Length: 330
Image (cartoon, rainbow, N blue to C red; front, side):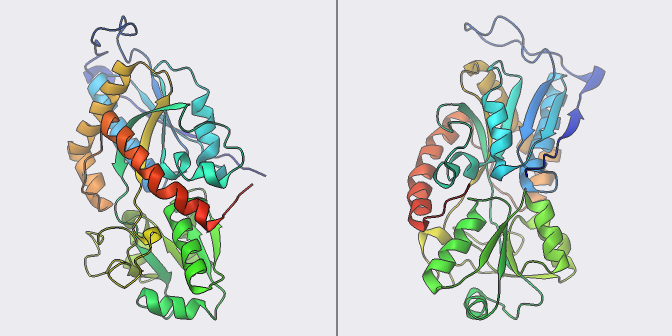
């Protein structure tokens, strides 16, 4: 049974706002946008990076436009429930999706029926690099690096926490299983928040995720970082080497991803461009900088043109990799 977590968070600029912003010429630009509240559906629960970016950047957009931006958390089915909802909304610039790239890329391989077409049903607005997502073990696991962990996992029952099926964490788990004949069980959550709660309770032996979300457990020595999948070390954990530096150079251990803002296909291009620009501005605002620094993020979001191009590159890298692993989900 799928449980839905429906939570709204309203962001408003009130009387000090700038009012609706007149758009440039075009068939759909005869009215101002936004002239009523805008909803951003986050297909994961509060407590993780996907939600934090949406709330912080939407608050900036609200302040700039004078309109409310409503954050609606709608997790479930690896993010597919929220994505399917947005795909069916009117393409009028008043409903958007904020999601992880795996919802739009890896999901098509994992699920027989997503409930939406990731290429045809959405227009990409902006993309924020998810940054380094460290691999950590529970304090009960006697490993300080990936080699020691693999040796331990060969002879011990191991549950590997992921924030969603098809996520980078899921791919790393499955690739380690394949390469080293491990039998780790991936345990999928509706986002990072509940995953770190279970790690704190000792239900998981290993997990991956964002620095800020795992930080309370790091500070209390509940978990220990052992490596960083991806192309670079985590800025806030500079002494933890990447998996590649430790000799694990399979493409699965070099992957990266985005937090993607998307609109229903057919949304006016001038609205897409306007919100894309606001998203990039938000990252450079005081609140945006503080939030990104807390998660160890350094790169500004890509605009709608750049993220659309890089999205194609991401598909070329990740879809064959997921197919090779042979993972299928209901």
